[in-house]
Structures are given as C-alpha cells and as structure tokens.
Image 1 (tube, rainbow, N blue to C red):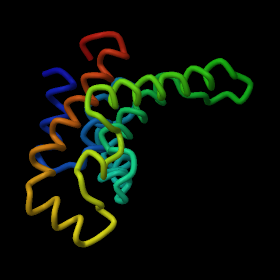
Image 2: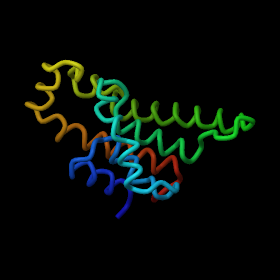
Image 3: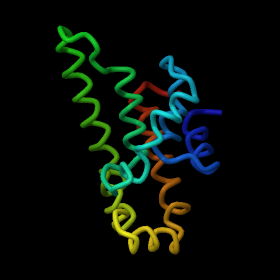
Image 4: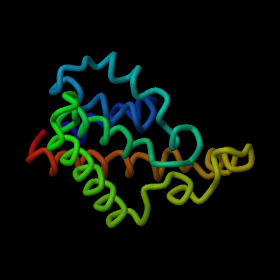
Length: 147
C-alpha cells in the first residue's frame, strides 16, 4: 500500500488529519508510527483553531524530517526547508483553494457553532479525507515519486 492510501486509511480509522499524513511517511525518516501519532496529535483541525490545515501540517513535518536544519551552521538546509514548505503550501492552495482549515470547511472551529456546523454537515467525513489525500499526493510528488 502506498503512503497516500495509508494516510487516508489512518484518517478514516479516526486519527486526526495531521497524524494521518505524518504517520504514513514517518517511518521512512526514522520516526515510529506511535511517535508520529503522538507528535501529530495537537495539529488536527488547524491546530484545533481552524488555522493551517492539519493535513498540511503533517506534510510539513515530513518535509522537515527530510530537509530541516539541525546544524546551525548549515544555512543551506535552513533555506531549503523554508522553500519546500512554501512550495508545498502554494501547491496545496492551488489544488484546494486554501490551506487554511476554516476556509476549507467554511466554518470557524474555534466556536461551538462552527464545530456543530462541521459535525452536522459531515465535513470531517467528506472534505477532510480529500485534504489528507491531496496533502499526501503532493508530499509524494515532492519526495520524488512512489513513497
């Protein structure tokens, strides 16, 4: 099973969007599935505030694992990680219209009214799996193919 399918399956099992994308790719970068689920736990629903889509956040964590700076003297990796983050978000926005959760869902998850709207309209079951799929597809493309 490829990572795109794996991410969607994780989401459909009940993991948050951020967890699903990060966990689908994490083991390739030395993070266990359990660690990925734990690290990604607070980023779903746009960091629980309707901000940057959790599927995007999960993807950005993976890109950080691949390109992120860890040596302060390595300014090249610092520039590279910033560039790939912008490239990812630009591509996601191009495909989905926005990378901001509340724009995608059409409601504000910071309010009870917004949460109830999302739940009663099945948005987490209809829109979010497609966001997970799209994030994982773009990530696969950026990492160079069938991940």
